[in-house]
Length: 130
Image (cartoon, rainbow, N blue to C red):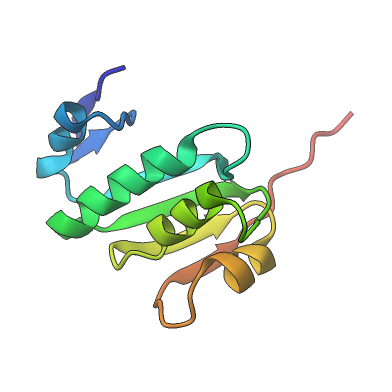
């Protein structure tokens, strides 16, 4: 896995994420990190919590803003270490915005700490016809 960067209207865009130190340092010169769509706020099937943790930790240190756009929220369990890693990761000061296609109440009530100033938006995906 490698990080692909391109320039879009003067903004460096990173197209994929990896959690290896040598790769995550390629985020040094970005203005914004966007987690775009998919079931990312989950901890019990895939290891997104580790990747999100590594990226937000780095972004926080470098003061790079992070947004989560149209992400899925798939469960919560305060007794699972993986879930708490994810909760900690998305409550870093670098995280500025969330839009979710799923359960905004679960995200707001369980994942996001009260003191965080994060803008939330719930979106509805278009229904398939036919």
